[in-house]
Amino acid sequence: MEDEKSSYRISDMQASQRPRERLEELGAGSLNDAELLAILIRVGLPGENAVQVGQRLLNKMGGLYGIHRADFSDVCQEKGIGRAKAAQIKAAIELGRRMVRDNPEEAVTIHSPQDAADLVMYDMVALEQEELRVILLDTRNRVIKIEEVYRGSLNASQVRVGELFKSAVKRSAASLIVVHNHPSGDPTPSPDDIAITRAIIQAGKLMDVEVLDHLIIGRGRFISLKERGLGFGS
Image (cartoon, rainbow, N blue to C red; front, side):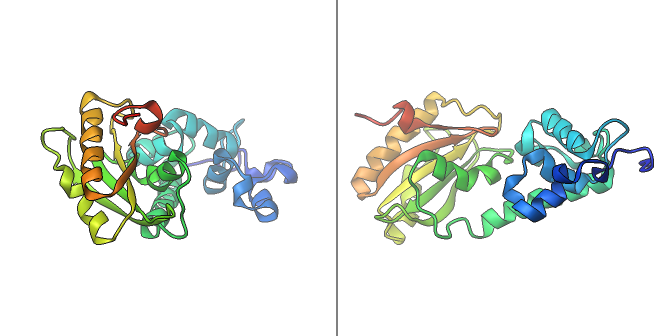
């Protein structure tokens, strides 16, 4: 059981440094990840305030994406966390994931690979197996729909490229962006990834649907094959 009397509380910090007060005054966007976690953690440990506990958790787990991927039991076992705080942290992250999932396309226009990655990374980074999705766009690069097309190891001989364009044709999409994840956390493209990209681009030309990019999502980062010149001819 936590000894709150000997713990370092947020209330022990100067008022101008307290995360809750700063959130009320400046908004949640002004807080860093450790400060947001501190609001959930609330009570720290002797010699370590809640913000420091939050920062230690981020460092140990590999950031918010790492906490998202970690088992509940692993988060519980971190010093200063416990079951109740772990549940609050996991619940907050899941609420964020559901907000993105439930309406990812609202008023979104894609201007860059980063814009596309931001739509799916939060969700896809936690997947335990490979999954391929397509982001369908209209003539002004506004998102029409994000659809899962394939789940399982992506192999150039197994993936049916035509499946990627069914929804694009049905929804009259002008272009699409292909996205898939690497559960290992390393987004480095494999030879199969490059081969699949070439096949998708060729199919897109036949279907009159431009393939703008192929993104590979890793742990907290991504790679654009188009930016790397992989699979996209000059």
